[in-house]
Amino acid sequence: MRVPSSDRISVVVHHFGGDGRPVLLSHATGFHGWCYLPIADRLAERTTAYALDYRGHGSTPRPEDWAVDWDRYGDDAIAAAEAIAPDGGLVAFGHSMGGAALLMAAHRRPGLFDLIVAFEPIVFDPSQARAEEPSPLVRSARRRRPSFESFEAAIENYSSKPPMQAFDPDVVRLYVGHGFRPAPEGVRLACDPEHEARTFETGATHRTWDVLGEIGTRVVVVGSADGAGPAEVAPLVAERLADARFVEREDWNHFTPFEDPAGVAELIGDAIDTELG
Image 1 (cartoon, rainbow, N blue to C red):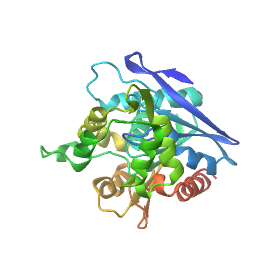
Image 2 (image 1 turned 90 degrees about the horizontal axis):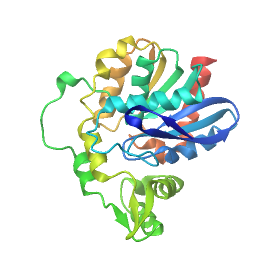
Image 3 (image 1 turned 60 degrees about the vertical axis):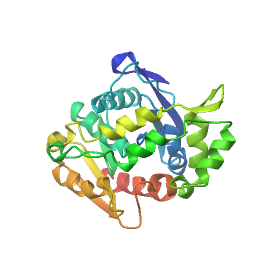
Image 4 (image 1 turned 30 degrees about the horizontal axis):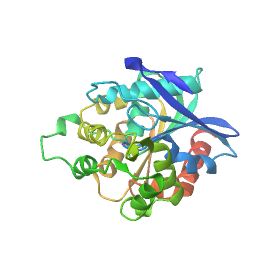
């Protein structure tokens, strides 16, 4: 379904089916909702899963001449969540950027969520931000090959090199199948590399850090031990939240939702049982 958000954008929300309480899956920068179908499938006996595509990702368009503003990702999360659970009480899983957007939504719409599982959300202290050379993620996004001669060629390319070399094969196929569009040259990325780069570049500029203590929603913050920025800040995010529990998995990394969908689905199910009974 398509639901209205800010800037006259209609956000695409995918219904993945299942049987049970509704759960919203919220994706990371550069990806899209379909990448989380393997997680949804493993939760299907106990939840009804939905996933959204944020603006400029997957099937949701980017406003023309839009300078990336992370607060608008929060608008998209609210639009999707309210469409799924207009009376509130939703459970949500957010990965990276998707975790930050869910926290924005929870701050602006108290009661919208009963529980958020935030996997290394991109929420940094903006007072610590400093001008520096573009991060490897920004440089990598700007160098990303935007098109291939076919879907099959794209799958073969991504499956042969890191980080996607370690992804569950279904995730790679879903990333390509729903993240590329037919084009004169073959197929082209729906998420423009420059849009992805700008999203990475501006990830420390939103002010969610300053309002974490005002968020009343129960949050399980998940962190890994891979040493990257989101992993380092995850326990600090949990400390600042009003009602949160921190879970660290030393055997995981920032891409684990794509590498081990079964393990992440189990974590989400355990969080629902533990936090909501």
